[in-house]
Picture 1 (cartoon, rainbow, N blue to C red):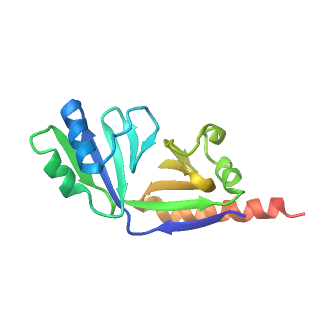
Picture 2 (picture 1 turned 120 degrees about the vertical axis):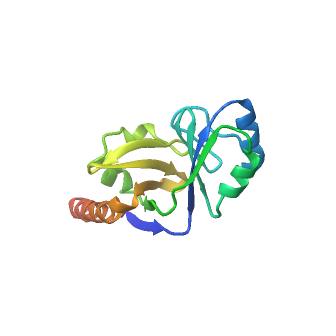
Length: 162
């Protein structure tokens, strides 16, 4: 049976920029290289576009990134209050997601991420180790997304009953 929970306290930072000096400075600040392959994850950074990443951390990385990137063309925006983070886990989780997600979930594995829609809600989906699916969703859509997932989980458990 699938389980759903909200993750509180994570700091979410949108980072934009590019070039060798930018990459080197970010690597120095974060301790790992940003992912450059589309729809991948490296360290705590999720690829959003050719020059855009979502950095997820337990602490605010904005100051460290600002200091490291001083003089570089960049954008660093804390979006922690604008996004909710939900996690769906359990053996039934892929079936719950498949009922309204257009992606082929079998093609996604840990280390990947994808911007998609779920029940008409735009979100960033990140499959994680142990069959956990993490969603980064606009805070204004969080209650709806949570309610939709809970309904889908209930329907899944009814259809799985003997």
